[in-house]
Image 1: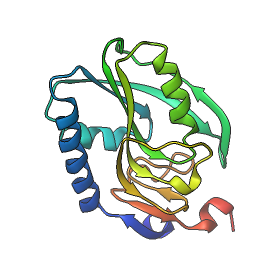
Image 2 (image 1 turned 60 degrees about the vertical axis):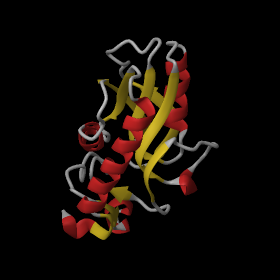
Image 3 (image 1 turned 90 degrees about the vertical axis):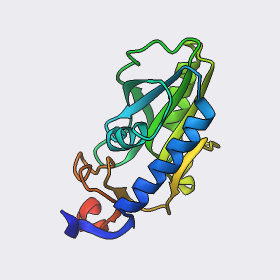
Length: 179
């Protein structure tokens, strides 16, 4: 599986350092506030787990599934497959994403969450790919900015594979283009 990776962009140590730094900032910003982390499945799982261990304030964790990808390409149609299991009314919501690329998914999730009357809705992402944006959006908390490459690992997948890699790397084109 590692032979499918062209280049490692973010290694394990860099991921750990980012989780620590983001956790410290989130602790500072949300101390003594009602915070709900909402992870967007499936890709958020490693990041949410590592990040939440580094946030030193009371918080709740919920999950939902939002999808903007078909088997091989991004779709402009966003599907919300599960609502949060915890009430977010009068609480601060922090959406946890593995990657913000087009930003269409987070835009739709934020719009839906605002209907539920939270005090605030922000986004934390391990990976930001601003060159992939289809709309104007900047996440509040960003771990790493990556180039416009097909990245996998640490929750990010290609057809459900590669999520278990402990790093983020560029997938070789021959894998996803069938060369």
